[in-house]
Length: 431
Ligand code: LLP
Image (tube, rainbow, N blue to C red):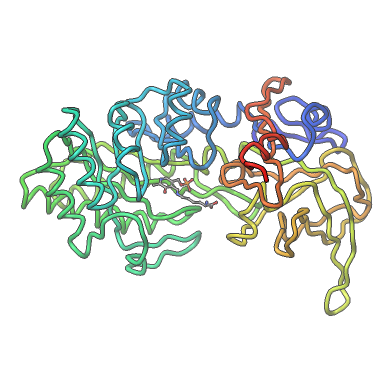
């Protein structure tokens, strides 16, 4: 749960507000964002990663207010689409603190980013090398770039599989020599300032072994570029992917612990290679916004089914589902749920929180013990839904994407309103 969440007499409070009061104004489903918690996590990364640039990965969740908070807390911002850049520009985010990602940026998107003056573009293909060079030649502007490299490491939650990960769409392979070629071409491109290499090994990572292998390979390439091209690239980005606790079983490190570990790995490798330690950056998304938000639903129906072997499961259908949280269906993700609007002494039953979409896989929380007297009208809160839930929300079954309500010091503010049927029908050109 977020820093300011607690239950009093069974009623969940976030940011000093009882959830039932908060919901009365906006209805359900709704995402509730604890602003102090969000800012605290952003600051913990900024302070823990002292000396680094910390880019908040806006793909996890972005809106104008959040971009503003990130700017106020002194972080940088990673955007990976034209739309995310538009939000950042609308928030007057300091343009030189924006990094622009993506494996298929168009000429138009790149031109817009370069003309706007983004701090760095993370180049991901030879086509993009050509596009950037054409734009700098045409405009006379300088583009600061990083090269996204594939270190051949696939990091999962508790494991990493070395070499297994060349076969994917991002970055230039180090082992094939493409990454070196990209560096050489960018070094030779007029109007291009090559800052360094970027590697992102995956998401929801708890084990630093994957980072260690990646850093070793990326720094080896820094060394090769110095030796063969006479160029010491001044920067290196280790990407994001720091894991969070979705359920009580996960135990993530603090930003300070992560930073100490990563710095130690990089310094050790640099010493071995005789390289100066580059200026480092990271790109956490989930670890900042994930735990700061919960989703509040209203229970609509309760149904008990018999399982093989005689056990029973209570299906609790809520007024949202895979359209506001696709992660359970898509990644088999684990979440928890709690009754948010009242106390209950009823014995717990094995429950499953499901949505209202036309699919059996429309599951929000696979397994959770819920009070046996749970009934229609009850409020249910699902914690840790800040990352990749609203940002991956859809209009499946013509669902209206829910609002995001920020809470702070007992006051709430709608950051993103609920979609309306007019919003939905606006793109339908009629019969
Ligand atoms: N940097 C780059 C280049 C990335 O591709 C990503 C995430 C991040 C940073 C931030 O990663 P984070 O710290 O948030 O894990 N939709 C999936 C996650 C996809 C992540 C895509 N890239 C999910 O819901 O788990």
